[in-house]
Length: 323
Length: 297
Image (cartoon, rainbow over all chains, first blue to last red; front, side, top):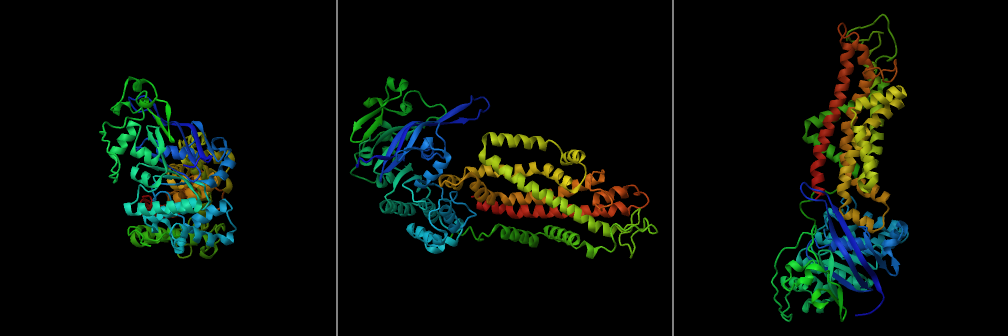
């Protein structure tokens, strides 16, 4: 692991959403992000994993300020994003991009591919207008699409091709970091592999960093160097992918690991029964959010939120077992 | 390129799409075809009024007052001996100009405010929505009546009055789909790309909601023409002797028992235009709805 200065640093970011009052229920708040901190080094791919609704997507969007965090700071390449004025923020957005999960809603249905890319090039004055056709053809080639794609509308493409278009749009501004929000989850397995291969190649060619949000541990193992595991808005474990998946520390990571079919006979088989449901994020359990489902829970887990413990080798875990 | 089979029709520029939608409904739906034909006929009559009028609409022939329809005066004459056909043809200009300009203004202002309200949310949305609700509480005729009563009857004031009465409709039509679009990933992508809110609203939201706005426009054009006629009927329209349909009905109303043709023919003119616009609006809505579903998946 290279120890360069982190490209993205997230300090104690929180975000909650008001839930409208329903008949017979008190108005509530969903703590989608609860004191989340993480960092991504230059050229690194960090996987952010967790079950549906745990706040992964909110995290990705909050780091890019597509959703304004309630508290905490996000620093990018030595600059505080959360304090950036709108003008500066719009300029910084050239360096931070996002690729979405649903290739059908992520492209404007009324805009031709060429117009979509030309608009970005215009807004950010990437190159003179005369160079647009060349630039667009280059971008399309980079994501494996023929130049003829430029004259088409999004609905003329398949899901995988649309995802390539979304990637081309993100690349058009020349970003340093791309948040891939379940970018391959909506695709067929064979297409998934192609898109992952494409993302991997782009990372090498353009020295990109990724925040790779997914629920698929197999994809994390294949694609990421480090991973962070999220449960109900909190990060419970962070570490290098191999160590984290082969020797999970947090009971939740173990449970996820056991629930995920990883075709790796070498992996140690720690069978932990997956029990219980994910609690309602409206009323998360006290102390450690995971304690009602945790086979190893103690009295402390019910009362106190576990602190993050550094376990060495770049591993951190938030669990009373290691506290 | 293997495009999905479900998406057969290649998309086109907005105007071409509208034309195609109109053509499709017109060929499939007789009512729409009749509506389009009738409305076009009225537009042609209004534009070429000097060609189609048989007499000067202001020319009084005191020897031929209250003449019933005849080969010389196709639809008869009024109490001053003015030719009713010619007055209807010229009156179409007033109705169409006031209706089109008023609805056009309302459409631009209303969809602008509606998109702003839906996209920005927060206090902007609160302020615009509350103002809209207040305006919507008044029937459009009452609202128009108040404005004209305050400002005095003239073409610009009538346009202002009818615009004000119509604006809230367009705000509502534009706001709801904007709220739905705002959360779509492609709008979020625009934000992530650093596009300004103005660019997102004009270039990405407007093109996706304008078919709905246009359908509403055709339906509210009919209402605008009706309101203009109603205001003229109660004496708050364009001043005589300028021929307006509502004014003609008002004048004819005084002779309704002896010479009913005075009121009947301008009433029929209003009926034809309003019916035609409603047929077009209904047809357009039917034509655009399934496409919206298709592209909204």
